[in-house]
Image (cartoon, rainbow, N blue to C red; front, side):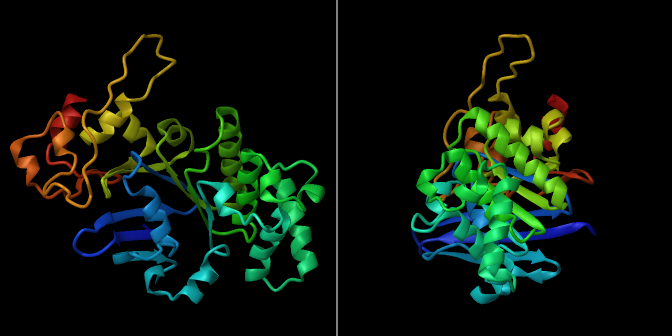
Length: 328
């Protein structure tokens, strides 16, 4: 697509040795379009966060990216050394991490950490960077920002720490924001405020947002396109309306059936997914969802999943996709 700002192709990330290790990201491909939001959704352990960390060059040994491409403005980020990636991180791609308390340095004030991001990428004085840090804190809704900039992370509530992380992520007005489970540790009312803040900032900056979440309610509210991950692989991609109203993979359908619709006026029981995700040290040889899939046949246990195009914007890695859609 001509408007793709990030093009991930066949990304593969391994943790541990060749024998006894596991492939946490196994051939993941998706596009992030300019000014749009793509959600990566799936159960815990599906590889969502590892995908984001791989894109950002943040996989620590013994983990390593072993294949694929991450194309940003035509340049493969996987070929860059650490110095070149530091130029990209923060300036071109900002990241909001899952746990702000562990992501922020406890020994530095909030304002100095935001200012450090600015001075790392722009030729400005320390005083100017501090002034902009206060402005950024004000912009993300931190009251009395000039005073709070001198506070340390433990002085901030969970929601305020997340706002500070967002301020640091947007400090250089990046073209892409990656938000990895940005509301996991927050209560429901604070979650809604943080998501609204992310949406408003994205619209204001014209940025593209890669949103990593397990919450389908967040996906419905925020996303334009969705990639569903299971056991390290993308099993379905579609625009958000298609995914919710015409899912083509049994796993996607199973995820949706786990969500309570409090507005349907019915006492509809939830349908949990039977079984557990596979151990990625010894994944099944065929479709990884087959052992849990109510539609699986013997052939699914050996069929190597490949994307089947349902439409120009909808792909499903399931050999029985036509029957899934017909069963609707």
